[in-house]
Structures are given as structure tokens and as C-alpha cells.
Figure: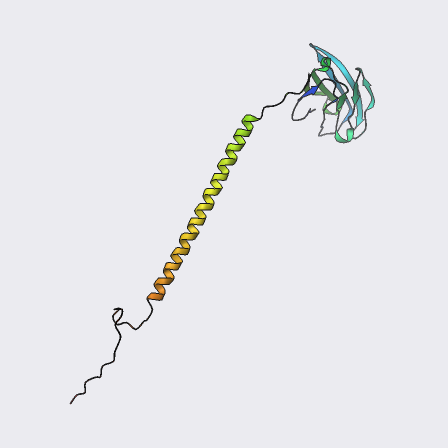
Length: 195
């Protein structure tokens, strides 16, 4: 039996509430007896009960013992949920979804769901969450800007190095100089003849 990941609900007085419950059996079911109970100051009052004869069959004759309650489950989804219409402050408390499967040697399974009934829903103050999210987002943005500036600087420095290399290569070519003295020209002298 399970009442979901969040086993409680805060409902406004006068609203309709779905109280969830699901079951799961690895070996299948046969005459699964289930019931919903309400804890009324230590006394367990049955809200509804029934029997599901086999897997994927709807329950036989759901007995409802409380006003404004409706069984809305479905065996196809292993769902044993109920709805309480027009909840009142008297409906607040713990509800237990109970099941007993004879195929599992009569083991009992149960899950508890707590219903809180209020005049109006609380307004949740998200200031701290917003501060944290903004701080983390700002840090990530600064990190991205830093990385972009770093990559841009490296790109510019590489381009400057490339340009300097080109200048060195073009100035070191043959340019009519002797012994690397600039401005001197090579003039051919007549070779003296031997007599």
C-alpha cells in the first residue's frame, strides 16, 4: 500500500479532496480486502471497505460508512483512492489505507495519509529561495563572462603573435644586402688578370 510520495495534504475548508492509495502485489491478488479508516482521537472508524476478487477486476459492492465520501479507485491502475466532498474541519486527521491479500498468506499492509483542513492556504515566502537562486545564477553568469573574456584575450594574443611572425619571415628574405648590412649594394668588381 502506498499513499504517494507526499503523504499529507493541506486543503481549504469546503473544497473537495482526493486521498490517494495504491496497492502492488508481486504474486497477484485473490479476494484482496481493503478499507479506509479514519483515526478519530485514537478510535479507528471505517470510512469504506470492499473486496477485489482477482487482478484487474473492480471491487464488489463498496461499502461507504461516512457522508460526502466516494470511492474513485480502479483496479486497472491498482488504485484504491477516495474523494471527500466539501471537507470540513472534522475531516482533518489521519486516514489509513489498509489491505489484506490471502495470496500473501494473509499479511496486512497499510499506509497513512494525513489531511489538514485550513481556512485559507498559507502564502509561502520564497524570498530566501529567490536570493539563493539569484546568487547561484549570478555566479554562473560571472563565470561565463570570465571564460568568454579569457578566450577572447587568448584569441587576440594569438593573432598578434601570428602577425609578428609574418613580419619576421618577410624581413629575413634575400634583399640585396651583403653580410646583412642594410643599405649596402653588391657591386661586381673586375677580377685582376694575372700576367
